[in-house]
Image (tube, rainbow, N blue to C red; front, side):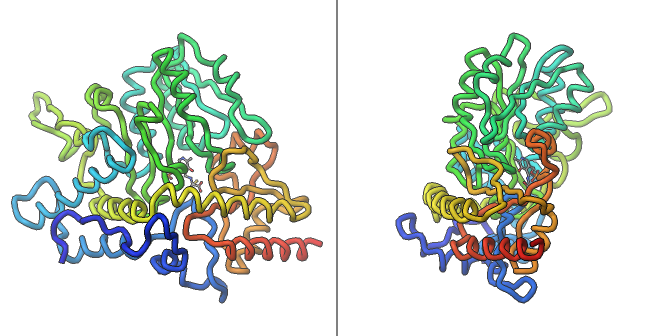
Length: 422
Ligand code: C6P
């Protein structure tokens, strides 16, 4: 029975030098299931990843063996739960090379993290006429919170345009930077295009003018080794559920001095030091930002997901996925009437596409009948769809547990789509 902090639980059998796809797939119960009577080919990993047994077992272990609230009890169960929860914070810090675990704030996910920064740091630092730079490829989660802030403060949003291949126009970015710029908030990897943005260069250009930056890592952290110090940003946000962890848990990383200066996000238990009707004082960072009982099982699961991925190796994952992306791209390019949206040279394993005279929803429905799960729609990137003058795309997004066979199945299912609409 594990009643102390969940120890690293990465799979022992897989070493970075021996990427055993069969063993990896066997770690994921859902990948063994069928859909419409056919083996499941799960290609919607950008929406959420599947969970390995190690993560499922860790959350069950918490509820079965040491379920208790954290930071509150003097008894052993509570101490064990607290140790596991705080242990997960340490694991996240190591995973993204944060200087300190005190800089990791648990949140529900990337969306809540951006809202937290906008509502706290943003309200304190952004005023009427100030400018926030975003890009045309942002997810709604990295647009709408800034729009809400702009409505409250009178700030102005400036947008970096993208090229036809789906790359940021860096010259245009340079021209947007001005004495009025207060923040650059940018996605690391586009969920709808797959483009990997040159965030180090973008952050460095902002910093050269004393401008802070927020990087949305929702789609980069599942695919690339992340080093927030190397990126040089001030805020980095991500969701656990795209990273083999449970839903409803994620993290905000921010530099310690910024967290110290930021006001609390929500008020309630655990975020205070003292409370009286005359006024309250705040708990230390990061607890100041974690009001109320958090998602304890989720945080523990996220820690174990990180152990699992570290056991395989993020560089190994990136290499394998890149090979898979190359294979998939070549295969899809051969399908007549299909156009890939997002063809940047630096891409994570996402293939968005449209087909002549066939609506993406029809593509998604027909391939689903073949046991292939892909996502169709605007992917919460309506401004990006407007940029390409399309209502939606069909999107296959890959993970390290996908195979060439999954891609062959997708290609065969797309041929069926063509037959239906012939
Ligand atoms: N993208 C997709 O299918 P949440 O919902 O908070 O876990 O993540 C929001 C988010 C933020 N930024 C980017 C770049 C994202 O891709 C997402 C989530 C999912 O593409 C759901 S729309």
